[in-house]
View 1 (tube, rainbow, N blue to C red):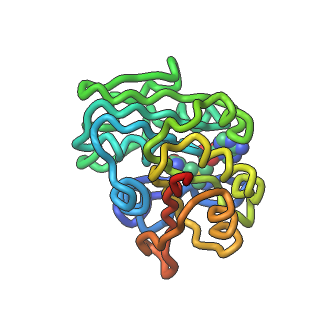
View 2 (view 1 turned 45 degrees about the vertical axis):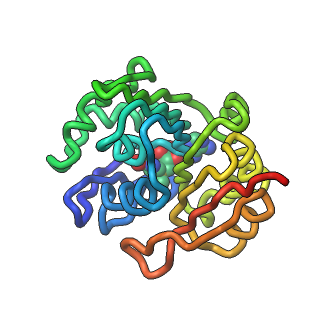
View 3 (view 1 turned 90 degrees about the horizontal axis):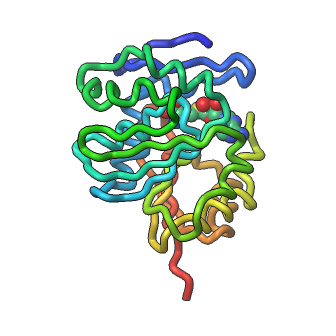
Length: 212
Ligand SMILES: C[S@@+](CC[C@H](N)C(=O)[O-])C[C@H]1O[C@@H](n2cnc3c(N)ncnc32)[C@H](O)[C@@H]1O
C-alpha cells in the first residue's frame, strides 16, 4: 500500500487491487471535514457509524471539538487500520489522531474527551447486521467507488443502513451518481446535494425520512 501526500498536506493510500485512492487528492483531511463532518454536522453525544473506516479520518475528524461521541467503524482490512499508528498527519489534527493510533490492537479506544471509537473488522455487507436498529444519528458512507464496488452501493445495503439510523439522521457520501441517489431514495432517504470539495460534482447527503 503506497502513501500519497494530498494537497492539504495529509496522506492518503493507493489501493492496488481496486486501483483507487482512499481520498480525493485535493485533501484527505479536507474531504473528511468538509464532505462528511461539516456537511452533516456533529453534536456532542452523537452515535456515528463510519461505514468503511480505513485510516479513520472521518471518525477522528468528527472528534475535533466534540465530546461523548460513540463511533462504530466497519472495516474489512485490519492491515489498513494498523497503518494509523505511524500515519503522519497535519499538526491541526494531531491531538485528535494521537489517542487513536493504537486502535488496531484493542479495536476500541476512548480519548480524553470521552469520544469512543469501536471497530468491527469484517465485511461490512455482513457486519452491518450486528448493529442495532434506530441507533445512529450520523453515517459517514465511504466505500470505494460505485464503479469498483457496486455491491456496497446497492438498494439492499442502503435499506440496512437506513434501518440502523434514527429518524432525521443524516448520511454523507462523496458520490452523486444517479442510480445511487435512486437507491438511497428507495431505501427511505431524502437526498440533497452535499459540498463539491475537490471535484466539480457535488457530494450527497441523505436524511432518513421519518415514517408516517
Ligand atoms: C475509500 S476507502 C475509505 C477511506 C476511509 N474513510 C479513510 O478515512 O481512510 C474504502 C475502505 O473500505 C474498506 N473496504 C472495502 N470493502 C469493504 C467491505 N466489504 N467491508 C468493509 N470495509 C471494506 C477498504 O479496506 C478501505 O479501507
